[in-house]
Length: 498
Ligand code: F6P
Image (cartoon, rainbow, N blue to C red; front, side, top):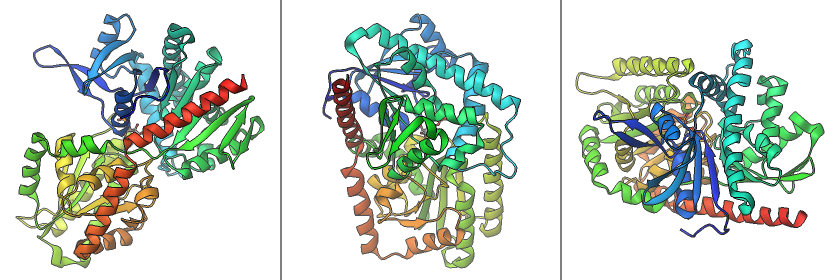
């Protein structure tokens, strides 16, 4: 990969960091890689630039390391790349309000249209309090650390790249103290239509939009989210801004904020290497042993936005309509446990298990279980399953991008067919080559499973080839480099304006 096109160091800022510390049974500190697509993508940035990464301390051991280095940064190595890692240590009570009451579920649910507004959410003292004494406090703590890093570098002017919905109000706090700073923020989840934000009381929704507009560039995965954001600026704080839709720019307090789309992707070369690694090959033997003639696969974090229950209902309908496939097919669902402290996620997990039990009892036999659910975090097994599927089900209600579709599409060895929700960011790129479904339409999902299974060999191979080519053409390097090009251009524009 090319080096950064500019001299400046990068400061990456995200809630979840590249690694976390834990203590093994022998009492020794060991590191665990941070989960999720965001971390994977940002490690690509770390490979090309000198970076300091600021992230929340997720474990007591992270906090311990932070104390050991006096709150400063510690050098860590990942995939031979050295990077500085600095933890933001929050009080656990404060962090709980930030993460488990405001970020997930409140903001996450708004951005994925998950609230059933006739009954939830109720915004009471608990939520107001969690906003003030949780979300805002953690954002302030992040801003303090960012400012500290900027102060330490004086005139070197590093680029600050913030990430995601956890840190919406952080940029305005940094801007107040460092008006000259270069701030860039990537929102990795959908930006919904502006009225969705009216679930939140005025001062909260306005603080979110104002916070984002303190950046120089605000980035999303798709043009649809960009449009939604521009409209939100006009609708939610219209008196304070001028929105130029043609240039995709918001003018606020005499500053121009660029709003851009960069569809995130994966490191293809790395992923192909991983697919051939011994640990994946070993897991592949495991998958081969459990599969029957056909394998339908889903791999997801156990999140309500992923639409797991409806995927199973569609499979139930498919088995009703096409009993000739019974005994010959398995729906393997590899679900990583997630956000276990949020009650909605626990209820959803129970709903999933209930649905699976009903379907397996209805269609299963003593030697055939139609749906095989594994609730575990076993990345190597997921990669092995990517290679083996005949049908991949990605029916998310809404999803910022969905990297599973890209990862699995790249390394699948069966010319497997992708069933893809029209409400995923990935659909903007892969929509032509998948079987496109509406996530609420069970008929279309059930029919898509059938169509995928009976599709002509040549057609399957053509579609799978196009998916591979599309992913390779727009891989993680391109995602990073196009952002660097824009950052450089925006820096020049700013320099000329002063
Ligand atoms: O962008 C969404 C994201 O932040 C990704 O990193 C990942 O898919 C997921 O959410 C991780 O969530 P959490 O950090 O809550 O486990």
